[in-house]
Image (cartoon, rainbow, N blue to C red; front, side, top):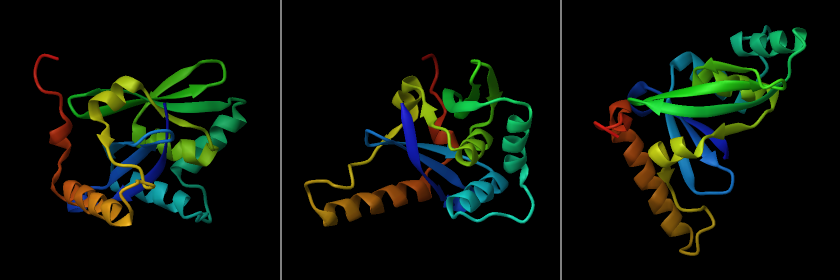
Length: 163
C-alpha cells in the first residue's frame, strides 16, 4: 500500500512523521529524531542546501554506484519500533530506519509503501477531507487528532503481550 502526505508534528518536542494512505483514510505515525525531521521538512519545503546533507549524499552514492532505488517499504513493527527496507531494481533489499529511508525516498522521488500488516496494527483512521459531513466535522476531527498527538507517546504503540 502506497502512503503519502508526510507531515512532521512535534508533540512534546519529539517529532512524529505522519504517512497517509493514497487510497484510504489511515495514517501511520512514526516517531523520528530531530535531524531526520529537519531533513524531511527541508525537502518538503523544496529548500536545497548549499552542500549535500546526509540523505542527499546517499541518493548521490546510489546513482554513482549504478543502482536504482525502486521503493521504500515499512515492513514491520516490533515493540513500538518500525522497520523499513530500501528496495533496489535488482530486488536487493537493505534494512534501514524508516526516517532515513523516507528522507531518501523523498529525494529519489520513489514510492513509500507500508505493508498491510503494519497499517492494520499501527494505522490510525481519520475521516477523508472531503467528508459529506462538511468542513466543521473535518475541523473537529483535525482538532481531535492534534489532541491525540499532544497526548500520545511511542510506548502507546508497543505491542501488548502474546500476539
